[in-house]
Image (cartoon, rainbow, N blue to C red; front, side, top):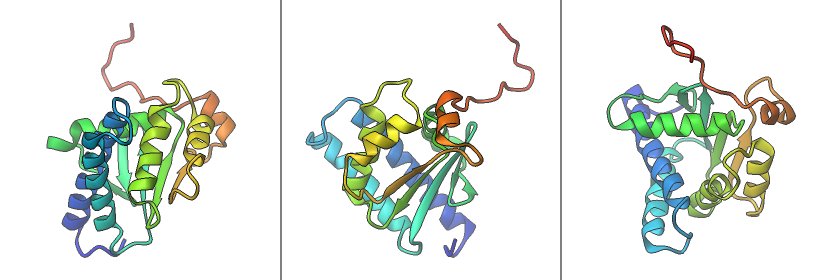
Length: 170
């Protein structure tokens, strides 16, 4: 990534993840024409545009309970704990290994992404979410299955977080 510092990258990641979290939550409650939803869509699009000022695309990759922003781990401490963990688990639960956001995404693409997750069944996998996203022509958003898995396997065996060390089994 050509961002000037690791601190700048961390700040951009935190900002985008926080706004995507709120957008995903808002999409599960509000229609896309709701004024409150539109405010969050605008903020998320501004955060994405800021991140894309120096890159052609931004990738959010989920690995178990971790989230990576164009290869850099997203700091899951402080204010980003809930938002980063939610996005990582939501992607993994749906069999999505990564979300690639390009300069073409903007508010329209982020709307398509948020509603692709919000409007499909909670147990829907990669193929259903991808199909929902594809309803928006050229959203500037691409979903990828987890590395090394094809979509059928990702759908049949969605990633779940590994048990924490010392956790007792029920």
